[in-house]
Image (tube, rainbow, N blue to C red):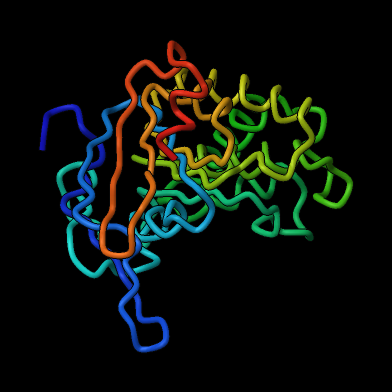
Amino acid sequence: MKKNNVLEVINLTHSYKEKRKEKLVFKDLSFSVGKGEILSIIGKSGCGKSTMLKIIAGFLTPTSGKIIVNGEEHKKPTKNVMYLQQNYEQLFAWKNVLKNIAYSIEQLDLDEEEIKKRANYYTELVELNEYKEAFPNTLSGGQKQRVAFARALAIEPDLILMDEPFAALDASTRDKLQESTKRIIKEKQQTVLFVSHNIKEAQFMGDRILVFGKNEESDFKYYFIENPQDKDKEEIKNLL
């Protein structure tokens, strides 16, 4: 593993049985992600993007291959790798914003004063200070997603996996959250895998893009795009 790599995916292969036939999801997938890097991941619906995130998170076992996080093999869910989905059901309806964010910190070995201090810090970081006493049912979709993001950040994990986190939001809210989320990720030097179905979003968010390409039944192709902001959208679209 290279010195500054937080994540190493090594020869990852996954398949499943469908009607007694082996169905390939991806094969011999290998890549690394450095400290503070955002890797966007795009591909057609059903191509395996979310499956890959679940394997990296430790929720699924791959057919073969290894996941290395900060030099150690990662096989099961831990606090070092946070998985952020697009739905908001992960918030506790009976806890206000501050207590939702504090919940994740309470899983760490910290004293009560430090938990409170960190919860307030991350509430302010995602610009929800005036809503800290509000409950999820009173928040907009964008505000709920900021709470979920703050809760993931507050553990200060090695890696955050974001699975189409803004897909359910309207265009205006999505644009604002893209900007604020990227700013915070870069400010905190957080390492992120960001799955999106939107090429423009993937270009804006990612330092690089991993493209899951057009797959034949027994084949799997993937591509990396460096400096995605400089690329033409159609050029990327042709790889899908």
